[in-house]
Length: 174
Ligand code: S3P
Image (cartoon, rainbow, N blue to C red):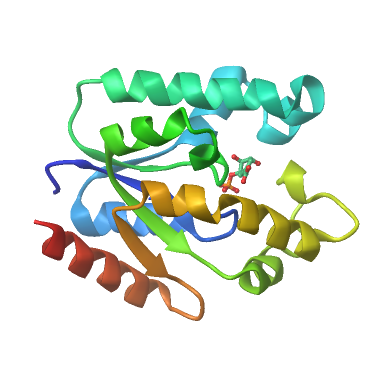
């Protein structure tokens, strides 16, 4: 159990949700995924939200939720957030306020290989997904770096190694 929340950030496909789940067993902390919280509230999938109301509507919901979470008084937990959450400068201090931010850093080629055929990420439904991933990653790198307290390079690493690195960094932080 940590005395602060842990926030997992990183590009789509970097493993935030699965690392969050595994980490929650290891550290005995509840885990929540902000995309899932938004989907539950809205009663529809991210894909449907983007299709009916557009990205900016989704981004407003993201910021609104982050604000609420920073005000919540509850036992510490792990949050995995959407890949685009750190992009809005308004969200960055909210993420930092919410807890210790862990960036799962990944290379575009790894994302492409992992998400080939995925239809749930509206931003990657295009002619040239790899090009789009590269472009978005270039745009976002600084935003991720600006939020991160801990950075873990996940390319080619098994889950156990990723968890081990996160735990080591958390001990060093103390
Ligand atoms: C997005 C990432 C998605 C989801 C939405 C937008 C992004 O979450 O929030 O499709 O802008 O990178 P994951 O990172 O969990 O795929």
